[in-house]
Length: 205
Image (cartoon, rainbow, N blue to C red; front, side, top):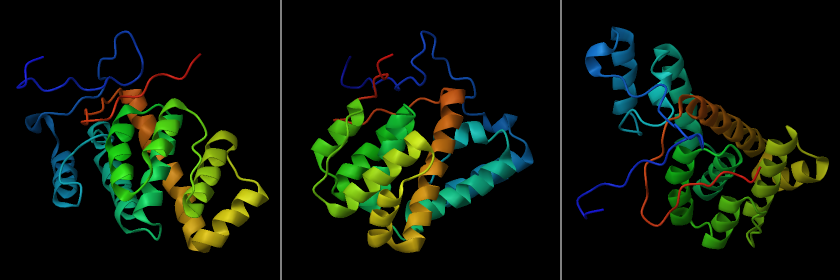
């Protein structure tokens, strides 16, 4: 590969023919409602129609509403940015979503999550963290993803650190990112390469 050749996107779906099912629409093919929803997204903190919003553009009102929820959870919720990014990485790995992993693993590292923690998440090992808030979030999100609820001990640990609002927002954050990962998994929306970060491998069968 020459220095001027951009790296190929990380294919989504671990398929032998991982063709995007719902790629970005050309502007001339959009309805007025789709253009309005796309413009609203571009004017917000995301600055572009990327990731799950590419397939969601087929339902512009849904895209607009999903975008507002995600905007709050990503940029404005009570949780520290380090906890948000770590939770997003846990969801991306559990659902094997290339886009969210390649976006949020670098952001988690920048926010202060240890490389060793991210390395463990990447390969599906339990990510031991010395930070009490990270450990509580890991237990909570991991258990929620695996069992669709949490035990009293995990709930109490999260409640002690994050409070009731934080527990509700952490739960909703995990659910929101699971939803957008599913949308991209179905649409086979690829992830964009990031320097120093590998695309996810499939979990062993």
